[in-house]
Length: 493
Image 1 (tube, one colour):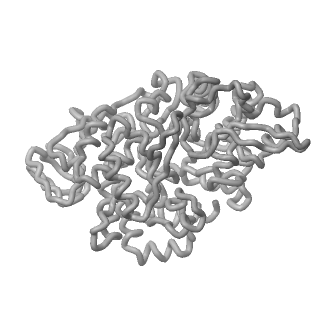
Image 2: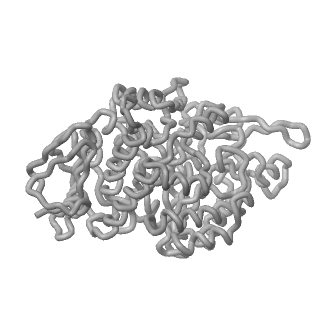
């Protein structure tokens, strides 16, 4: 954490407002998500004092892994040992518990067996794998314990709390085990507490599911999440650059607008996970998804599968670095292409209604960590490289890819900050002027209006109907011409 603070001060500075820390707690698996103790900082990373130092320069987003714990956690070990304090902390489904409809994000068995100290065997629900055992908030003591963890993050100064995999929190026999009304009730309870005890702190729900299910976590727009992930955005942007057509992206974006005065969208292109494919149901065809799979594999990535209740399987996510996935395998200079296309893709991200989030590997121009993926045989490791700060400092001076992404994004972020049209709550209107160009008007019809136009193709495109001053280049024109993967932010005449 101390080194991270130095890197942010030396290289990133004030380009970003908030820093999101993935699970910083002691853990045993899944790069932090097999949490041992929600309330402690992994000593290999630092301490709560180091976290406070980060808060001196940036707002802070913390992860709350509410759905599950490591098998090494005191909660689970106490439950296994029969400690009455932990009675009911984990779900041990009986043989009459109907799991036939349960939605799975993984291929591993849903229930695993664990030996108790007395030699008997316990069965526990494991949505994500044998070392991530789901807690059971149907037990009041569990709900109180989870709520206390959340309040602890508020007391540590978190300005955003990300509710990881929150859709799976509540289980009922015969149900899908996801998006249940009781889960939404718990989020409403936490929203009340957050708004009352730490006004301005935001709840962010992480539910990698089809768009129609995802947006239910806004509730009525003022009683559940303050922000919801736009999981459809990464695959749709990637699809636009792979096909050279923004049609599917524009069709989807035309359905996205303001939520309320207190809730908005959380937009991203890359993260510590892969590029989710499930959110594209109803938005892309099977042929479209096959193109994304083909590009991922051609660029050295992997494809993760999920199993449906009926035993069938389909693609769950693409495991790849987003910048590398944008590059055509035939490009002569892949690194140069990654910067050109990467900045264009992020121009889309930064133009949409909502709050934009940039993965640090994208900000710093990282590539795929295929060696780390292959050595661990964990597909997501391809996009989770641990950077050495000294080496990074040198590469930011010597690598055009790293410096190009950081400086390009810094420029866009600085310009964006000065444009009221890019408020997270300002309205957006999508226009279709050419299928190769994504066009969005922000704050249309007001003195603050900005028109963003991004060419997703490798062809030059003329848009004679657009006129104004491009705040990026400073040039004014009647009609614009976009070079391949070019973009403008126009203040219209």
